[in-house]
Image 1: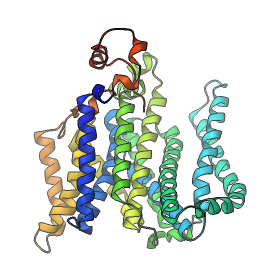
Image 2 (image 1 turned 120 degrees about the horizontal axis):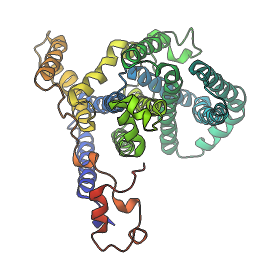
Image 3 (image 1 turned 135 degrees about the vertical axis):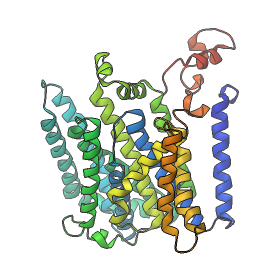
Image 4 (image 1 turned 120 degrees about the vertical axis):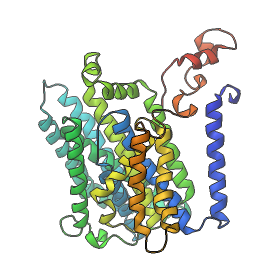
Length: 432
């Protein structure tokens, strides 16, 4: 089987393994101190956020400034789960697991019901989905939390402490990402009907709303532990290099396989020409909302990772001005290029928060906010398509190996060169 793997796939796997081992060794030996460790973790989180924006804007063509809003939702939701667990409260785990599952179940039922009606208005659909979402989480809090809290606490408490910690952390990250996805789905139902520029303004407004709500989590919202504008403390610092690496690889692989599927090609066709895509039978609304939700899930996952690295969250970190960072990274790297976003995401943090902060003369640290606009201006003048344009490294532009899709004996006896022929012509769909 390994002999039939394509060279780009082998190169990607080997390169990723080497990167993981080298960074882990440097961290374990103390060669990379806490400052550079934080820079690497921050760069990975921001790259995940930017990959999500590239899916929404670069590949689907929807100009969005809302990524930091979903980033914040994922961060605070994941942090609340682990904070409650460290204070002997399993309610956060139950809410993000059973509340999300119940909401998705009700979505499926509601979707089947709405398909039976002709021309349901967007605002009616939005209202129905909001109602079932509130119902799902209300039922979970009122009925499931009191019943299941002792059960969940007992089950996780029976495990060794190190294992139960990792399980809770996984649930927190997945729950934060899922809540970001649900929020983006609800928000996207009415807002994705707007044109691209108006959609960008609406998403910017969403980021501002999220920041204001976070400032008042202990007054308007019933989350006293988040402490509102004072900032949330007491978050366990559970983020490690293996978690960072696994999360980033997951985002890359999911996005790569999605883009090379028929669904991904439908998303790209919407970017090129909405009307033409609609005329050939593509569900434009579905393609838009899927890209928006998946991109927001990536941001929510990155938020959970970042929250458990800092062990502190403040609403000021998610102000609307910060929402331009992923946009700048995507534009600098190249719209529609995962490779460009991966490179620029890490370079952005290394340059802005690493080298410029350390090596500018004392008292001139804030000049880094003058340097990077100059870099952006020069890039737009000299290379407006971005660092990579739409170019991708070989692995990201190729399909999965044919052996993962169809056995040789089922595809007919075409000789030893058949797998290579399939791969060269791109036969078959890519699945996650």
